Amino acid sequence: MSELSRVSGVPVPSVKYYLREGLLPAGRRAAANQADYGDEHVARLRLIRALLDVGGLSVASAREVLAAVDDEGRPLASVFDVAQRSVSRADLYSVRTPGVAEERIDALVAERNWHVSPGNPGRIGAAGVVNAFLHINRPELVDLLDRYADAAEIVAQADLAAVAGQEDVAGMAETVVAGTVLGDAMFAALRRMAQEHVTSRLYPVSADSSAAASHPGPDDPAPRTAASRTSTPPTWTP
Amino acid sequence: MSELSRVSGVPVPSVKYYLREGLLPAGRRAAANQADYGDEHVARLRLIRALLDVGGLSVASAREVLAAVDDEGRPLASVFDVAQRSVSRADLYSVRTPGVAEERIDALVAERNWHVSPGNPGRIGAAGVVNAFLHINRPELVDLLDRYADAAEIVAQADLAAVAGQEDVAGMAETVVAGTVLGDAMFAALRRMAQEHVTSRLYPVSADSSAAASHPGPDDPAPRTAASRTSTPPTWTP
DNA sequence: ACTATCGGATAGTGCCGCTGTCCATAGCGA
DNA sequence: TCGCTATGGACAGCGGCACTATCCGATAGT
Image (cartoon, rainbow over all chains, first blue to last red; front, side):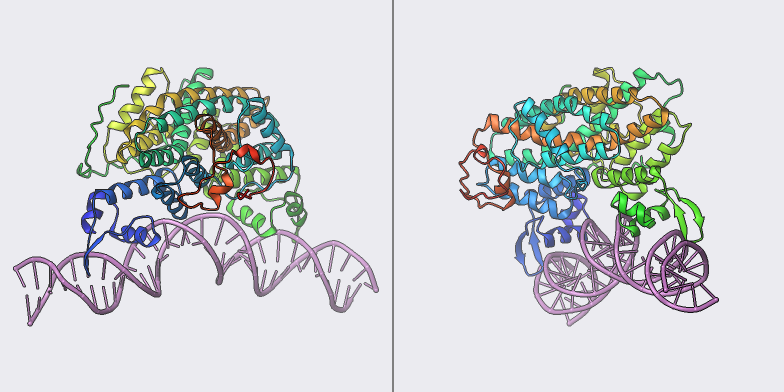
């Protein structure tokens, strides 16, 4: 276990915790005080940390998602659903103008001929956001929906293309989960960059952004040796 | 205060808490045990709940964001920056292959002629996600970047157009904050719907969302089209 | 044989977002 | 004027979560 911890960079107590919580399958017991872990444990541990740290999932959500990944016979749509729910905020903005926001979303769906089931977590979430826009007295932000939907179509088609490119079913499930959970973070990050870009074009600020100056700390180098294996050579071409 | 609580729907102890934490300005003291609150307090309270519940901000982040909104003379770019940081995940996936992910992001930025400052939180975050993709051995997901960037441009332009449509500066700042913080949630929700739509077109046999919620078995057939049910609450048995 | 380490189990820690309690004060009806 | 209730503020406590520290019996190595 200590070697697993060393290779993966996860502290031993955390590894124990993930074992206890059912995120990480137990290793093969070689003796009463010895267990063997393989590459799949290292990979799983990395996936766990990616889901928790980058995707922002809770341990409970990660457990459900990983159970879906491990479930061989589960249909892909179900894996999608579990992944989507894991990143969806359970505690929605309490609806104070019931119906209006849902109607707006349903109108959008109908207009685009989207097929969306009524229980889709995105439908509930989008209605909650629209409701929040109305409630803070900023109805004009609701009109962002159409452009956002254009963008969402592009992203969803790219997501599905990535899933379809997988060979084996297990890879598809993991791709679905990683794409859904980490994709949220990736798009949000790209949106921040695009926002700065568009802002700088609309409002050419002479002084550069306060971002670099007011962000002194977090670039801690943490010089650790490159113990990570790079089985796939990162030599893609942009 | 009890009336403020009643109108806004926020419990009195929470209102006290927000006052203490500096999210909500104090009311005009009419007497030692009486304070008057106006419409602006109700609106602020609604904004607070939207940021916390829908946007998922912490109380500390909300305080910073609201301080930026209240700061009259603050340039808009700074408000953007504060809002972006508030929704950015501070604890990034620890970089194990330093440089590679950043280079990929910088190549993307250069290719699109984006103006992005090095300290942009999105740049760090995107590099973290790319790094996670590589680290979980799914480098093909990195190729999602280009389509995501297309979508991010659309969204960012819509965002800025909404900001530019505001008349007063205070409204702009609040629009920036609401659009940035709640926009993340809105896009994520729309992405979920678009994903289901595209999935249903590629794989016409789509599982009910309620079926996944009830943890179907490995051999759950679910050969029914989701269109068979229109507005019935979760009942996945025909 | 002896010590160091291993795995597992259990309890504890720190943080966060509230929430419950207490108290001096003040409005208000009798 | 006298209670009675309600108010606002200060402070402590709670429950959940993600770890983290401690202990313990069982080996593995020497």
